[in-house]
Image (cartoon, rainbow, N blue to C red; front, side, top):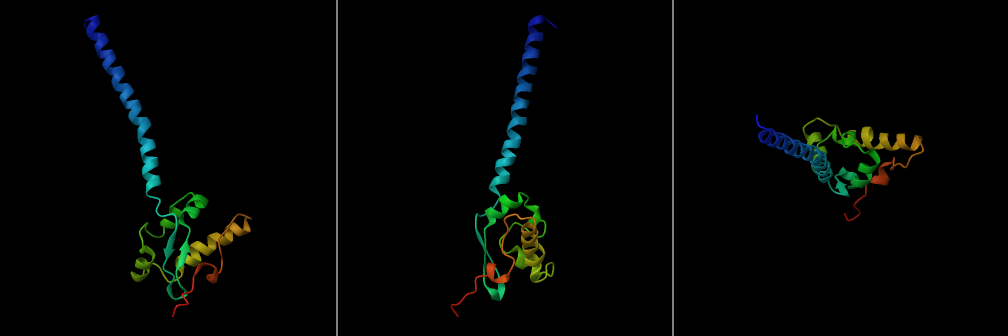
Length: 130
């Protein structure tokens, strides 16, 4: 191989290595942005049965928990998924509220951390327009 051809080969290898490093650097950033984008609404209103809807500060919970699977390991990240699972018999009435919400709020309270409500009336907004 001539010196000129060898230099061109090394230059090509160098350029390919730079491109590979750029791709490796960009992929995690892209994954982070994609993960952030699928976080959902800042606030939601959850179906609360006869006791009325439950205003749910979704973003506040995301920041406090920092792990979507704490909740979404139990139900999908889709509107109505809790009710759908109840209808399919995969969740029982009040299961999410008692075993997820209230349990987590009580644990946080015991640890002297900021916590959410632990009684029905503090979450459900009774509809008085009947």
